[in-house]
Length: 328
Image (cartoon, rainbow, N blue to C red; front, side, top):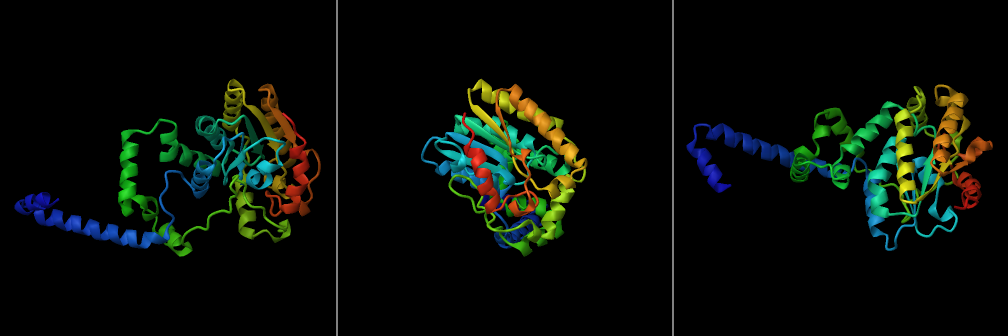
Protein backbone atom coordinates (compact mmCIF):
# COMPACT_ATOMS: atom_id res chain seq x y z
CA UNK A 1 0.00 0.00 0.00
CA UNK A 2 2.87 2.41 0.88
CA UNK A 3 4.60 1.68 -2.42
CA UNK A 4 1.35 2.40 -4.28
CA UNK A 5 1.00 5.78 -2.56
CA UNK A 6 4.59 6.69 -3.46
CA UNK A 7 3.90 5.87 -7.11
CA UNK A 8 0.76 7.98 -7.01
CA UNK A 9 2.72 10.92 -5.59
CA UNK A 10 5.02 10.83 -8.63
CA UNK A 11 2.06 10.83 -11.03
CA UNK A 12 0.35 13.98 -12.22
CA UNK A 13 -2.90 12.24 -11.37
CA UNK A 14 -1.76 11.57 -7.80
CA UNK A 15 -3.70 14.34 -6.10
CA UNK A 16 -7.15 13.53 -7.51
CA UNK A 17 -6.67 9.77 -7.10
CA UNK A 18 -5.49 10.12 -3.50
CA UNK A 19 -8.39 12.46 -2.80
CA UNK A 20 -10.80 9.88 -4.25
CA UNK A 21 -9.28 7.09 -2.12
CA UNK A 22 -9.48 9.18 1.03
CA UNK A 23 -13.08 10.16 0.23
CA UNK A 24 -14.00 6.53 -0.41
CA UNK A 25 -12.42 5.48 2.89
CA UNK A 26 -14.24 8.22 4.77
CA UNK A 27 -17.60 7.40 3.14
CA UNK A 28 -17.12 3.67 3.73
CA UNK A 29 -16.28 4.37 7.36
CA UNK A 30 -19.37 6.53 7.75
CA UNK A 31 -21.61 3.88 6.20
CA UNK A 32 -20.00 1.24 8.41
CA UNK A 33 -20.68 3.38 11.47
CA UNK A 34 -24.39 3.87 10.79
CA UNK A 35 -24.85 0.37 9.37
CA UNK A 36 -24.17 -1.15 12.79
CA UNK A 37 -27.90 -0.61 13.34
CA UNK A 38 -28.78 -2.57 10.19
CA UNK A 39 -29.14 -6.34 9.97
CA UNK A 40 -25.81 -7.95 9.05
CA UNK A 41 -25.31 -9.07 5.45
CA UNK A 42 -25.84 -12.82 5.13
CA UNK A 43 -25.43 -15.24 2.21
CA UNK A 44 -29.19 -15.95 2.25
CA UNK A 45 -31.93 -13.40 1.47
CA UNK A 46 -33.71 -13.15 4.82
CA UNK A 47 -33.27 -13.92 8.51
CA UNK A 48 -35.45 -17.05 8.46
CA UNK A 49 -33.01 -18.81 6.10
CA UNK A 50 -30.11 -17.84 8.34
CA UNK A 51 -31.78 -19.02 11.54
CA UNK A 52 -32.60 -22.38 9.95
CA UNK A 53 -28.98 -22.74 8.81
CA UNK A 54 -27.88 -22.28 12.42
CA UNK A 55 -30.60 -24.49 13.86
CA UNK A 56 -30.02 -27.40 11.48
CA UNK A 57 -26.26 -27.21 11.98
CA UNK A 58 -26.85 -27.55 15.74
CA UNK A 59 -28.83 -30.81 15.40
CA UNK A 60 -26.87 -33.61 17.02
CA UNK A 61 -28.84 -36.50 15.58
CA UNK A 62 -29.63 -37.47 11.96
CA UNK A 63 -32.81 -35.87 10.66
CA UNK A 64 -35.67 -38.31 10.05
CA UNK A 65 -38.41 -35.90 8.95
CA UNK A 66 -38.15 -32.61 7.08
CA UNK A 67 -41.16 -30.27 7.10
CA UNK A 68 -41.27 -27.47 4.51
CA UNK A 69 -43.79 -24.67 4.02
CA UNK A 70 -44.48 -21.01 4.65
CA UNK A 71 -44.91 -19.41 8.08
CA UNK A 72 -48.44 -20.87 7.99
CA UNK A 73 -46.84 -24.34 8.15
CA UNK A 74 -44.26 -23.00 10.60
CA UNK A 75 -47.02 -22.29 13.11
CA UNK A 76 -49.35 -25.19 12.27
CA UNK A 77 -46.96 -28.17 12.08
CA UNK A 78 -44.81 -29.11 15.04
CA UNK A 79 -42.56 -32.10 14.31
CA UNK A 80 -43.59 -33.59 17.67
CA UNK A 81 -47.20 -33.64 16.41
CA UNK A 82 -46.28 -36.01 13.58
CA UNK A 83 -46.67 -39.75 14.23
CA UNK A 84 -43.51 -41.46 15.59
CA UNK A 85 -41.13 -39.96 13.07
CA UNK A 86 -37.93 -39.64 15.07
CA UNK A 87 -36.01 -36.37 14.80
CA UNK A 88 -37.93 -33.76 12.81
CA UNK A 89 -37.24 -30.21 11.66
CA UNK A 90 -39.67 -27.59 10.29
CA UNK A 91 -37.85 -25.50 7.66
CA UNK A 92 -40.54 -22.84 7.06
CA UNK A 93 -39.96 -19.59 5.18
CA UNK A 94 -41.76 -16.24 5.31
CA UNK A 95 -43.94 -15.52 2.27
CA UNK A 96 -42.54 -17.93 -0.36
CA UNK A 97 -44.21 -19.43 -3.39
CA UNK A 98 -44.18 -23.21 -3.74
CA UNK A 99 -41.44 -22.93 -6.38
CA UNK A 100 -39.07 -21.47 -3.76
CA UNK A 101 -39.94 -24.18 -1.24
CA UNK A 102 -39.78 -27.08 -3.69
CA UNK A 103 -36.54 -26.01 -5.38
CA UNK A 104 -34.81 -25.28 -2.07
CA UNK A 105 -35.82 -28.70 -0.78
CA UNK A 106 -34.93 -30.58 -3.97
CA UNK A 107 -31.63 -28.84 -4.70
CA UNK A 108 -30.33 -28.17 -1.18
CA UNK A 109 -32.20 -29.67 1.76
CA UNK A 110 -32.62 -33.27 0.58
CA UNK A 111 -28.86 -33.68 0.21
CA UNK A 112 -28.04 -31.82 3.41
CA UNK A 113 -30.63 -33.44 5.67
CA UNK A 114 -31.07 -36.83 3.92
CA UNK A 115 -34.52 -37.30 5.53
CA UNK A 116 -36.56 -40.49 5.42
CA UNK A 117 -39.79 -38.46 5.21
CA UNK A 118 -40.82 -35.07 3.86
CA UNK A 119 -43.96 -33.22 4.93
CA UNK A 120 -45.07 -30.36 2.67
CA UNK A 121 -47.52 -27.88 4.19
CA UNK A 122 -49.45 -25.94 1.52
CA UNK A 123 -52.18 -23.35 1.10
CA UNK A 124 -53.42 -21.55 -2.00
CA UNK A 125 -51.17 -18.61 -1.07
CA UNK A 126 -48.03 -20.56 -2.01
CA UNK A 127 -49.62 -21.46 -5.35
CA UNK A 128 -50.31 -17.86 -6.29
CA UNK A 129 -48.28 -16.56 -9.24
CA UNK A 130 -47.97 -13.08 -7.72
CA UNK A 131 -45.13 -10.54 -7.75
CA UNK A 132 -44.13 -11.18 -4.12
CA UNK A 133 -43.74 -14.93 -4.77
CA UNK A 134 -41.67 -14.23 -7.89
CA UNK A 135 -39.48 -11.73 -6.01
CA UNK A 136 -38.94 -14.31 -3.23
CA UNK A 137 -37.82 -16.91 -5.78
CA UNK A 138 -35.46 -14.54 -7.60
CA UNK A 139 -33.89 -13.44 -4.31
CA UNK A 140 -33.35 -17.06 -3.28
CA UNK A 141 -31.84 -18.44 -6.49
CA UNK A 142 -29.59 -15.40 -6.90
CA UNK A 143 -28.33 -15.48 -3.32
CA UNK A 144 -24.76 -16.51 -2.62
CA UNK A 145 -25.95 -19.21 -0.21
CA UNK A 146 -28.14 -20.95 -2.80
CA UNK A 147 -25.54 -20.68 -5.57
CA UNK A 148 -22.83 -22.00 -3.30
CA UNK A 149 -24.96 -24.95 -2.11
CA UNK A 150 -26.02 -25.89 -5.65
CA UNK A 151 -22.54 -25.49 -7.15
CA UNK A 152 -23.63 -22.68 -9.47
CA UNK A 153 -21.59 -19.87 -7.86
CA UNK A 154 -19.13 -18.24 -10.29
CA UNK A 155 -15.83 -16.52 -9.49
CA UNK A 156 -17.69 -13.23 -9.89
CA UNK A 157 -20.17 -14.34 -7.22
CA UNK A 158 -17.32 -15.23 -4.86
CA UNK A 159 -15.52 -11.95 -5.51
CA UNK A 160 -18.73 -10.03 -4.87
CA UNK A 161 -19.30 -11.90 -1.62
CA UNK A 162 -15.77 -11.05 -0.50
CA UNK A 163 -16.31 -7.39 -1.40
CA UNK A 164 -19.60 -7.27 0.50
CA UNK A 165 -17.92 -8.68 3.59
CA UNK A 166 -15.07 -6.12 3.39
CA UNK A 167 -16.91 -2.96 2.38
CA UNK A 168 -19.86 -1.39 4.17
CA UNK A 169 -20.76 0.45 0.96
CA UNK A 170 -20.94 -2.81 -1.00
CA UNK A 171 -22.75 -4.61 1.81
CA UNK A 172 -25.49 -1.95 1.98
CA UNK A 173 -25.59 -0.99 -1.69
CA UNK A 174 -29.23 -2.00 -2.23
CA UNK A 175 -30.33 0.32 0.57
CA UNK A 176 -27.95 3.10 -0.48
CA UNK A 177 -29.54 3.16 -3.94
CA UNK A 178 -32.79 4.03 -2.19
CA UNK A 179 -32.16 6.65 0.52
CA UNK A 180 -35.73 6.43 1.81
CA UNK A 181 -35.33 2.69 2.36
CA UNK A 182 -31.94 3.22 4.02
CA UNK A 183 -33.35 5.78 6.48
CA UNK A 184 -36.33 3.50 7.16
CA UNK A 185 -34.02 0.59 7.97
CA UNK A 186 -32.03 2.81 10.33
CA UNK A 187 -35.23 3.96 12.02
CA UNK A 188 -36.48 0.43 12.60
CA UNK A 189 -33.11 -0.84 13.78
CA UNK A 190 -32.18 -4.51 13.98
CA UNK A 191 -35.01 -6.93 13.41
CA UNK A 192 -36.03 -9.06 16.38
CA UNK A 193 -35.34 -12.71 15.45
CA UNK A 194 -38.39 -14.91 15.07
CA UNK A 195 -38.95 -17.25 17.97
CA UNK A 196 -37.86 -20.53 16.45
CA UNK A 197 -37.62 -23.70 18.48
CA UNK A 198 -34.75 -26.13 18.17
CA UNK A 199 -37.01 -28.16 15.85
CA UNK A 200 -37.61 -25.13 13.61
CA UNK A 201 -41.22 -24.74 14.74
CA UNK A 202 -42.40 -21.11 14.80
CA UNK A 203 -43.73 -20.27 18.26
CA UNK A 204 -47.50 -20.30 18.43
CA UNK A 205 -49.51 -17.11 18.34
CA UNK A 206 -51.06 -17.73 21.75
CA UNK A 207 -54.65 -16.74 22.31
CA UNK A 208 -54.69 -14.07 19.60
CA UNK A 209 -57.91 -13.94 17.58
CA UNK A 210 -58.63 -12.89 14.04
CA UNK A 211 -60.63 -9.86 15.16
CA UNK A 212 -57.46 -8.35 16.68
CA UNK A 213 -55.33 -8.79 13.56
CA UNK A 214 -53.28 -5.65 12.73
CA UNK A 215 -54.72 -3.78 9.72
CA UNK A 216 -51.33 -3.80 7.98
CA UNK A 217 -51.24 -7.61 7.98
CA UNK A 218 -54.80 -7.76 6.64
CA UNK A 219 -53.81 -5.43 3.81
CA UNK A 220 -50.65 -7.42 3.12
CA UNK A 221 -52.62 -10.62 2.68
CA UNK A 222 -55.33 -8.87 0.66
CA UNK A 223 -52.70 -7.45 -1.71
CA UNK A 224 -50.98 -10.83 -2.00
CA UNK A 225 -54.19 -12.56 -3.10
CA UNK A 226 -56.00 -9.80 -5.01
CA UNK A 227 -54.72 -10.95 -8.41
CA UNK A 228 -54.64 -14.64 -7.58
CA UNK A 229 -53.50 -16.79 -10.50
CA UNK A 230 -52.73 -20.47 -9.99
CA UNK A 231 -49.00 -21.09 -10.45
CA UNK A 232 -48.35 -23.62 -13.20
CA UNK A 233 -44.59 -23.27 -12.63
CA UNK A 234 -45.15 -23.90 -8.93
CA UNK A 235 -47.10 -27.08 -9.66
CA UNK A 236 -44.27 -28.29 -11.92
CA UNK A 237 -41.76 -27.51 -9.17
CA UNK A 238 -43.78 -29.55 -6.66
CA UNK A 239 -44.00 -32.39 -9.19
CA UNK A 240 -40.20 -32.37 -9.60
CA UNK A 241 -39.73 -32.47 -5.83
CA UNK A 242 -42.15 -35.39 -5.46
CA UNK A 243 -40.42 -37.24 -8.31
CA UNK A 244 -37.01 -36.73 -6.70
CA UNK A 245 -38.30 -37.93 -3.34
CA UNK A 246 -39.76 -41.03 -5.02
CA UNK A 247 -36.38 -41.67 -6.70
CA UNK A 248 -34.72 -41.53 -3.28
CA UNK A 249 -37.44 -43.68 -1.65
CA UNK A 250 -38.43 -40.78 0.63
CA UNK A 251 -41.97 -40.97 2.01
CA UNK A 252 -43.91 -37.74 1.31
CA UNK A 253 -47.14 -36.33 2.72
CA UNK A 254 -48.68 -33.09 1.44
CA UNK A 255 -50.95 -31.31 3.95
CA UNK A 256 -53.59 -28.83 2.80
CA UNK A 257 -53.47 -26.51 5.81
CA UNK A 258 -56.39 -24.51 7.27
CA UNK A 259 -56.96 -20.90 6.23
CA UNK A 260 -59.85 -18.66 7.20
CA UNK A 261 -62.95 -17.92 5.16
CA UNK A 262 -61.87 -14.30 5.06
CA UNK A 263 -58.55 -15.27 3.51
CA UNK A 264 -60.22 -17.34 0.81
CA UNK A 265 -62.41 -14.35 0.07
CA UNK A 266 -59.31 -12.23 -0.63
CA UNK A 267 -58.43 -14.41 -3.63
CA UNK A 268 -59.69 -13.61 -7.09
CA UNK A 269 -62.13 -16.49 -7.64
CA UNK A 270 -62.71 -17.16 -3.94
CA UNK A 271 -63.95 -20.68 -3.21
CA UNK A 272 -63.72 -21.73 -6.86
CA UNK A 273 -60.00 -20.84 -6.82
CA UNK A 274 -59.54 -22.74 -3.54
CA UNK A 275 -61.27 -25.84 -4.95
CA UNK A 276 -59.20 -25.70 -8.15
CA UNK A 277 -55.96 -25.40 -6.15
CA UNK A 278 -56.91 -28.38 -3.98
CA UNK A 279 -57.90 -30.60 -6.91
CA UNK A 280 -54.76 -29.91 -8.94
CA UNK A 281 -52.30 -30.27 -6.09
CA UNK A 282 -54.00 -33.43 -4.86
CA UNK A 283 -53.82 -34.92 -8.36
CA UNK A 284 -50.06 -34.35 -8.68
CA UNK A 285 -49.48 -35.57 -5.11
CA UNK A 286 -51.30 -38.85 -5.58
CA UNK A 287 -49.94 -39.49 -9.08
CA UNK A 288 -46.45 -39.41 -7.56
CA UNK A 289 -47.46 -41.91 -4.86
CA UNK A 290 -47.45 -39.37 -2.01
CA UNK A 291 -50.16 -38.99 0.63
CA UNK A 292 -52.64 -36.08 0.55
CA UNK A 293 -54.15 -34.84 3.82
CA UNK A 294 -56.98 -32.34 3.38
CA UNK A 295 -57.66 -30.48 6.62
CA UNK A 296 -60.01 -28.11 4.77
CA UNK A 297 -62.64 -30.81 4.28
CA UNK A 298 -64.26 -29.54 7.49
CA UNK A 299 -65.19 -25.95 8.47
CA UNK A 300 -62.69 -23.76 10.34
CA UNK A 301 -64.39 -20.88 12.14
CA UNK A 302 -62.66 -17.59 12.91
CA UNK A 303 -62.10 -18.62 16.52
CA UNK A 304 -59.30 -20.98 15.45
CA UNK A 305 -57.19 -18.26 13.81
CA UNK A 306 -54.78 -15.65 15.15
CA UNK A 307 -55.08 -13.83 11.81
CA UNK A 308 -56.50 -14.58 8.38
CA UNK A 309 -53.91 -17.25 7.58
CA UNK A 310 -52.22 -18.42 10.82
CA UNK A 311 -53.73 -20.66 13.48
CA UNK A 312 -53.72 -19.64 17.12
CA UNK A 313 -52.93 -22.08 19.95
CA UNK A 314 -56.44 -23.53 19.96
CA UNK A 315 -56.34 -23.98 16.19
CA UNK A 316 -53.00 -25.80 16.39
CA UNK A 317 -54.44 -28.06 19.10
CA UNK A 318 -57.47 -28.78 16.88
CA UNK A 319 -55.19 -29.66 13.94
CA UNK A 320 -52.93 -31.93 15.99
CA UNK A 321 -55.08 -35.11 15.86
CA UNK A 322 -55.30 -34.83 12.06
CA UNK A 323 -51.51 -34.82 11.84
CA UNK A 324 -51.00 -37.54 14.43
CA UNK A 325 -53.63 -39.72 12.71
CA UNK A 326 -51.55 -40.13 9.58
CA UNK A 327 -49.30 -43.19 9.31
CA UNK A 328 -46.82 -43.85 6.50
